[in-house]
Length: 164
Image 1 (cartoon, rainbow, N blue to C red):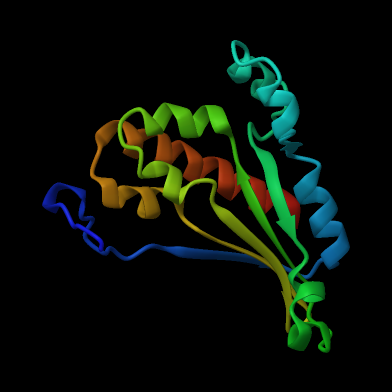
Image 2 (image 1 turned 60 degrees about the horizontal axis):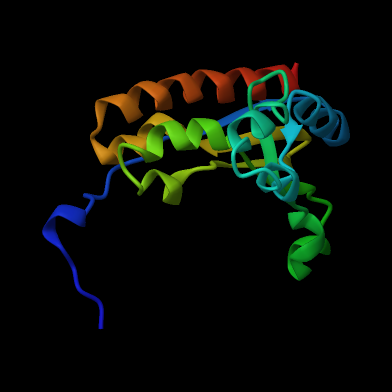
């Protein structure tokens, strides 16, 4: 049985799905995307419970973000793998940024890290993601909103740099 509490309900809100594109090879976009990011090594981050924030800070890439995980969608989806479409989904974030928001509302951890999809379509490579400020804006918390707007800028820069 699920109990609903009025103060825990979040109103559905529109989120902005942003898509950037360029006539650039998929593999080159992936390489340029990934070189801006670090990689989360969860085991290493958790190896010293007193130093998690510093350990994860050292894993950040130049964008201040890191790859949490990667799914090669064009290989793991049977019907998609039969097409010429290339597609890779990333969870991209930063545990320290998530932590700075979670102290205001634990539900931020449901919404971050954001997913980013790099894919091919009609001879172009595209990068799509939900704009963090519109996803996290549903929580109506000013400190989260401020951090989410900073994430908007990071993700836009990340996408544009990868596609240029």
